[in-house]
Length: 602
Image (cartoon, rainbow, N blue to C red; front, side, top):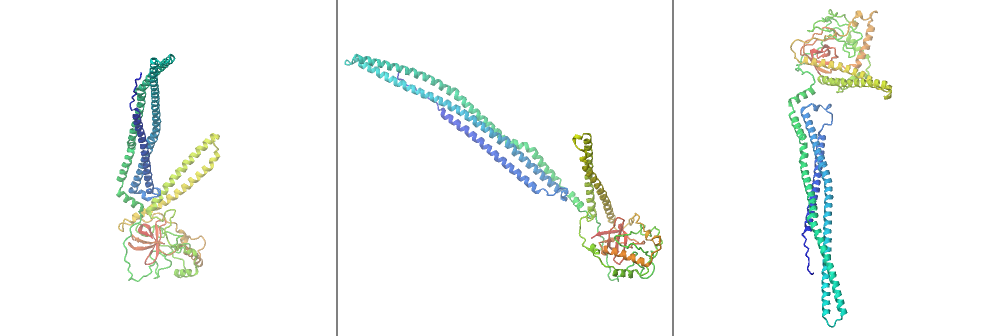
């Protein structure tokens, strides 16, 4: 009856705590890796941002259309390198984005799920442990009760046996003691049965706990930890996979930088520089020796008024009177008639010389009198202001070659604008037709202002194109003339201007007027008036320097002779008719063919 039952338990509680510590360490490692990747993405984003800022810092502020430096291959290659670097920064941003989405966000969500699952498994294990501990406590209680009842039953039996042998004890006491021993024995038997049942129940629960319930919980925890470990390892691989995904694009960026480096062409850049700054001017000729030891005498000019100093008539014919034109007036420029290629006499009706002048007095005295009588005006000094470089619409302030390029560019821009306006007009017409067929879609009259606007824009652009085409033709003639001048001093002279000059018959005394010829007084008055007008607008100072490439015999009115290699002062540029007004250093002004000169404007 008094035998004791020993209950032995393996250290499951310690093992359970080991598993709990290990799984918690795994979750901490997962969170640590998520934090690492997050900081890595911040580094990538900062790197990409700095790269983009660097690219933006070195990109040109002006558009490539307005920047002449963009035409050089070295600048273009540098821009391509910056563009490739910008694309490279975009790939770093893509790496950061992929890591954020695939690692940080996914692992953070997965970590929360694993923590919840781990908590559930440990709650289940702790509940099973608690149930087993409760069964053990009940078993211990029933065991102690059985032990106590057994001792009391044994004690009651001994008391009844002693009273039964005692001669002094009454029968009632003996019966009472026997009855008490019987009750105690019955209680011990019941405690024994209860303890045996409780022991059987505990053993069953303990076997289920150790052999079924806890192994299942441990298996679940093991599976959870293995899944977490596998997910963590796969996330480690995402670092390299994300890099490998952008490697082809990064490789293309690096290849693009190599291509940009190979595209640098020094020879081409030199040609681009020449093309950008090519002026079209011809090279200056040799500086001629000026002999100041010879006395300076006024050389008679074909274009000067009056008769030669020696009183002999000019062999090329007397100078006729032009009452309405000053010979070298800017407003009333009268080009000489066309010449023969070798500067021979003209083929016009003035081959025998024009009629004699109609001045009654010495022209020099007349000019002196005019200069005293004419009051100077403020307007006469307008042209004396400094000749600075002022941008003009026709780009005449630029050198010939640059002017031609600018005009071509303007023509192309106007052409594109014109085509755009034409397309817009066609679109508006189609829309108007649609509105007319289906009025519910819109009012056709609402499109009239826009159609009128496009028509006016088209007309304006056509006029501008015509204007630029005219300027371009003039610029190309200038460039061609300069190229002909650069062929050298030797060889046959080029053809003089082939275009017929303006009609000069109205200057002939025979065709001046159907009325009677004017008197000398009227002639003087008209000369006064014309000279006053030209005096206000024409400053008498040279605008450049030029050298005679060929000899020219100025045999017609308004022209002047020059020798090959002679240094001349440029008084007036060619106006498009092929003639240029010059002044000889010995004195005298007149027109010579532009193609016979090498001009260097100042």
